[in-house]
Length: 268
Image (cartoon, rainbow, N blue to C red):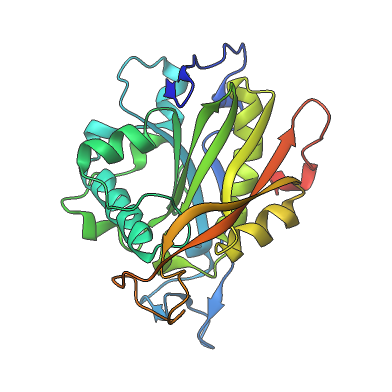
């Protein structure tokens, strides 16, 4: 795997992700007063509490999987519309301009190199026992209801860092917390001893609140670490297409897996 410091190898681990994946969680529910689950303000006919389930899988381009890995791993080639949906959600986040440092949206190759060069994980709506139960879909739009969020784990001098995306269609359901807790579980299984988030921009208020709530150590603040769209001295309510750029500070968050226990309730 490449980084700003050259090629850094993925750590060697004798542990298997099959011990914790697929990982299941329960989404925070919005009710409509009639017992139906509501996502993005829309209640689907016949939805019940079962619709609050979510499942985390690893997603990879590798076809060289052992039997255990097939259970918790989605193969990119089998789900091109899911990859396209993830790509679209990421580019919309870049356009919004207050969380990721990219100044331009990514094309297919750039997104693949950025988000799939390490270990990647995706959270889907529904309770799946096995990756083979996830059916392929024709178009990216077919994932609107079920793509909840995703994250990567990549080497970082050579501890690791992570990048997280919550599908804005499903915000308010506790997805950030589900992804953050999952990150804390999968990272030591992969073999990393610690994690540091290099650049959590102060404009990314939701992430800062999340990492503090989960117990990450706040170890530094970098002045003017990012030049982000919509953060300049002009109208702070400017749209994502506005060229009103400004420099923002970034906070660094750290977790040492050898000295900081992951709370048991994070598996709940």
